[in-house]
Image 1 (cartoon, helix red, strand yellow):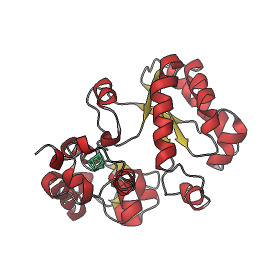
Image 2 (cartoon, rainbow, N blue to C red; image 1 turned 90 degrees about the horizontal axis):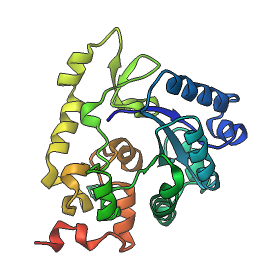
Image 3 (cartoon, protein in one colour; image 1 turned 90 degrees about the vertical axis):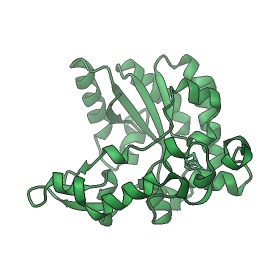
Image 4 (cartoon, rainbow, N blue to C red; image 1 turned 180 degrees about the vertical axis):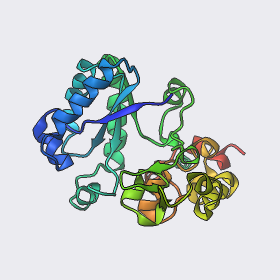
Length: 255
Ligand code: SF4
């Protein structure tokens, strides 16, 4: 199911506005949320970009989203792009253990009393089978094979990542045909070929039982972390390096 998303990165104007770098952004976000809910949309999802500084506000953001009629809240640890670069460089991004602890808290504790659906981005190999079952098979496939990003600048890009990664911009509205880009841009065709070659996925993805559904997760994040689109998620790489990647999720363990 599709969602209409509204970003709320803090439970008050001071924290949200400072994260966004825009005074008044908090009030605008709530106004937009109210307008969508008031217009009858039931699939409005609040997205919270999570870093160490706003983890203590998670419960309040969920309560705020519920009070304003949102249907769900999705927690996305800040990526190493755009404004997130400074947070990563400043040591404010969540590491693997913090992210897994957050997922456990949200799934095992907060979800039971939130009153609305809660979602956290975590590669399927790092989720329990129970949670995968409860998510009705959603494995984190980022949808890039069904997506084209139309940016506010008029550029046509792989997705929103085009705002910060110029080489993932494919053309421009008014100058290039969306149809031609979708059907024939060499970078899109190459990405599709690489994604279809599940058996040839690099690293731990090549040995992961979820590879066919996960398809290496968010390819934009992969590109930011490794300059490669089809590449293991940084969290699965870290899990493998620290011996935390579950053996039961390795194809090699069940042959
Ligand atoms: S190892 Fe690769 S395919 Fe498996 S869950 Fe992680 S990113 Fe997805």
